[in-house]
Image 1: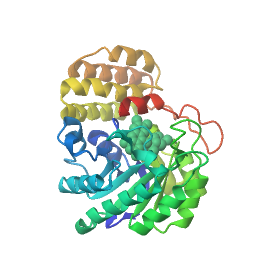
Image 2: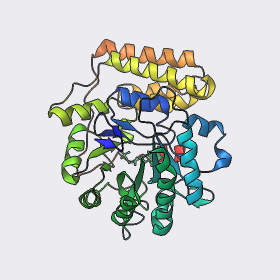
Image 3: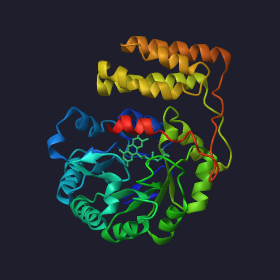
Image 4: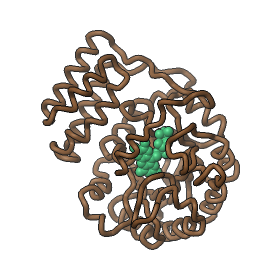
Length: 356
Ligand SMILES: Cc1cc2nc3c(=O)[nH]c(=O)nc-3n(C[C@H](O)[C@H](O)[C@H](O)COP(=O)(O)O)c2cc1C
């Protein structure tokens, strides 16, 4: 699969998640089989570009190409400027955020709220495409199915965006109004795929190789994008990619491998954020890794009290050594299917925390 001139390793993507898919996590997902990763969103507000948060998000050192940066905002010129700013800092693909339900930019609702104003949405797309074209940088768009159950306009916006020069569209199968509640639906994604010539990516509630296969078959989409199910489980990408390529399941990872992956992840995390902030912001990742493991909840409570990197690394090592003494491999994770109950997939608390 291609985005503009970039040939991707496979069609299993990691979703942009503010506060989660930072550079260390994206690199880990790519290393473990994700064919493509988009950065956490970068604001179009020029006055925030020099903040530590934005400069960390615009740091792609060591990341495998293509470097894709998502931008968010509500003003066409500011979005065009943000695209140029990120291209100057190494972005090879620019993704426009019309998918996020809760981010306020410039005192206006950006992200999926833009879907409510189709004229503005298209102005933004046109301005960003015009800013990227001289650099040969493809523009992609991430959106929801619409802004309300009664106003599902993904198809209209996707068609207009394709005509304006967008080269790939990702659709999360929920409306803005839904937030993360209810179930993702895939009919709108199938309709978008049927109407467009450019690649279409299906997103929402994909949490297993079987679900990825079913969503690809149901929608006809070119790729799947996985967000929350990758939290604490970055090896899901190789599991899904292997299953799609061969129809057979990979064995769950060895406990010893997970220990090594998490310890490496933590070291990269401290390097990006510094030890003080890094130890604190790593707690959510560690919590996700151990969430479904025996003794995971109690460990998380204890680990949350540790304040320095050495103690955090040691605690993780001890936890996985004890687990490894009892079992070689992680248990197979439970999955959902299209249609029936998908409860447990909703993770509004994380979303709120990340976007606060
Ligand atoms: C913590 C969190 C942060 C997110 N941040 C972004 C973001 O910055 N940009 C974006 O387009 N979507 C964002 N999303 C939405 C995801 O990219 C994805 O569309 C959504 O989680 C549905 O996919 P999933 O069911 O596989 O998680 C975020 C989601 C979560 C849970």
